Image 1 (cartoon, rainbow, N blue to C red):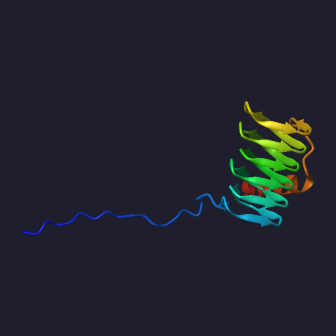
Image 2 (cartoon, helix red, strand yellow):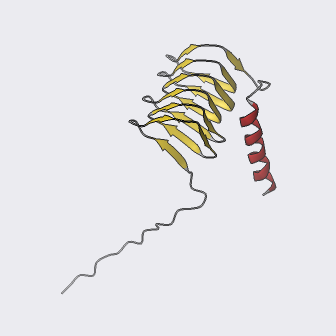
Image 3 (tube, one colour):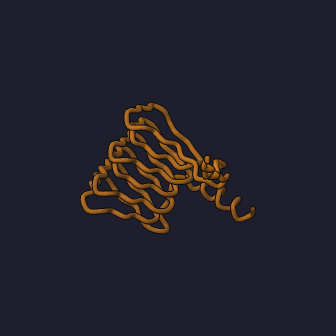
Amino acid sequence: MRRKQKTRKVNSTRSPEAPALTYITKNTEIKADLHCDIDIRIAGSVEGEVESTQKIILDNSGKVKGSIISAIAEIYGEVIGDIWVSDRLTLHPTAVIDGKISAKILIIEDGAQIKGSLKVGPETELKKKVSDKISSKESSKLSA
């Protein structure tokens, strides 16, 4: 007598609302500007401007030599350049920053290192490029 095997139905379709992500792996070195409308996670190194209308995460092993421009950023690695964030910037204990920081909200955890200047608060002037892109993206969501 053969036993009937149980089958499981696996839903393999991804929702169109699933988060998209650009990932720069640990051993990757990029010498170029990156501009995305999705989240960026960097574990390697980038020499150039990194811009996202969403979120940028710089891992412990990550290094950016250039500007970071985004709505939200979480920094664990090293940045040699300016950081422009229209909403919340979090500097984790392993973060090392050498440059100007401009953010609406700034969270600095114990151990984070900053060599530069800070502009923080709701009236902080942000880099025009990211501010315009984020505003237009938010207004298009409201009208949809």
